[in-house]
Every structure is written in structure tokens, then in C-alpha cells.
Length: 91
Image (cartoon, rainbow, N blue to C red; front, side):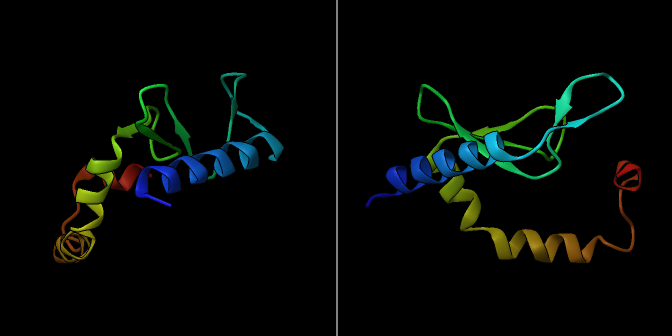
């Protein structure tokens, strides 16, 4: 199974889990899910929902590039944890 097939399978599993999860009504009378979930769009990109208002949409190749730098990102966040930007405090 290649990477695109794995991502498509993951997206399908996440969509199924999302359908089964009970929605939580927010103050704006719309349904939101508190967990992260993925969807595969018509062009083959993977959309990640649950981190912010808008989804993060990347192609499988872009996700792979991001995954290659996970340790660097963790190190960067660790170095800046003592002085986070103000927007980090809103979460």
C-alpha cells in the first residue's frame, strides 16, 4: 500500500469515526467535534480539522515533508516555550 492509499484509508476511517461521534453544539448553534479528524478532498489533498477554525489542507507530499521535520518543530517549540506569542495564551 503506497502513501496515498494509506492517507486515503486513514481519511476514510476518520470520516467514519466522525459520523459515529455525537456532535457537540456550540454557542453559534452549529455542530463541532472536539477531536482532530481528517478528510480527503476531491483533488487528493488531506484536510486536517480541529486545530483552528479553518482546516489545514496539504497534499500527501506536503504532509511527508512536514513529518520529516517533526523533531525540529518540537525542538523549536521547546526553545520558545518560555516566551510564547500572546495568541498561544488564548487556547
